[in-house]
Image (cartoon, rainbow, N blue to C red; front, side, top):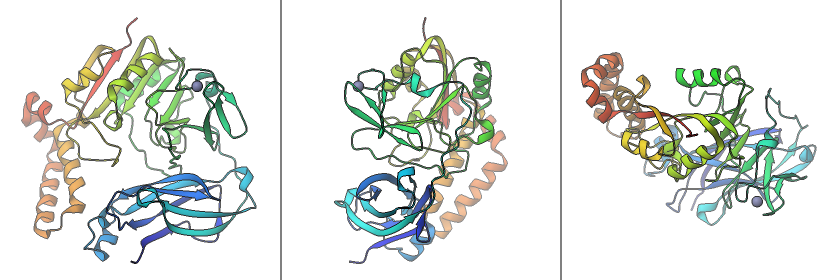
Length: 379
Ligand SMILES: [Zn+2]
C-alpha cells in the first residue's frame, strides 16, 4: 500500500522558533485522522486535518476523503532546543500511531515571543480548573500543587487541555477569524477600566487588541493569552466585568455547563454578549456540536438575566444561504449543479438585503444564520 501523505511546509533542513506544518494526507483506515507532531519522541503539537483540497481530489478522485485531506498546525521550538538537532515525526493517532513522516532538523536561534500590553497579570487571575487552588510556577510549566496537574507553556502561553490533549497552535494564521460586531466593540470600549474575557477569540489582528481583554481560545493564535479545552474554566470567581463570545457556543460539548462557568467568573451585574450558529453548515469539523434555535439559546443562557436576544444583520437568512452555498460548492461533482449553485449565489448576494426584507420577521427567525444574546449576571 502506498502512503498518501505529503508535507508541503516546512521546507529546508532547519526549523525556526515558529514552524508551520502543512500538507495533505489521505488515510487508508477510513477513520478521521488525528495527526500530531512528535519532537525527540515527545508529543509537541497537533495538526488540524480536514481542510478542502480540490487539487488533491482532482488527482485522487476515487478517494472520498481526498477533498478534505489538507492539514496544518504550527510547531514552536523552545529556547532549550536552539542549535540542537531534533528528530521530528508526524503520526496518525487514529491509525494506531502510524508513522507518516520522519526527518532530523537543525534548530536555528530562539526568538522570544513579542508580549503585548496587558492591564492584568494573567497568572494572578488563574486557578487550577479542577480544584481551584492557586497555581505554582515551575520549570516545565505551571502546576497545581494539590492535583499535581501540569499546565504546559508554549511561548509563554498556558494550555489547559483535556486528558491526553496535545497543544494545537495556529500562530501563523493571519486572517481575522471572527471580526467583532459593533455591539462587541461597544462593550470592550465601555469596560476599559475593568477586565473583559473574549471567550473563543480566534486570531485578533494587532490593531484590535485591547490591554484589558483576556483572549482565550481552544487553539493558540498569535495573541492568545491562554488556551483552554476543558469544560471547567481556570479563572477565579468574579474575575470579569464582561464576557464576549462570537461564533463559539456551537463548538462547545456542553454549552449549558459553559454558560454556568461564564456566570461564575463574571462579577455580579457583569455583562455577557454572545452569538452562536443556527442555520449554518458544519465548520470546524469535528469540533462543531450544537446549532441553536432562539429558544435553545435562551435555555442555555438561563443563568443570566436577559437584556436582549435576537438576530443581527450578519445573521440574516441571506448570510445563512450564502454560507451553505460556499460550504457545499467544493463537494459538488456535477458541473451542471456547480453552475446552478454559482448562479443562485450570485443572484442572492446581489439582492441580499431585499431578500431578507421580503422574508419578514417570522421568516428571518425561521432561517437565521444565528442568534445573539445579551444578559447580566444576577446580583
Ligand atoms: Zn488542582
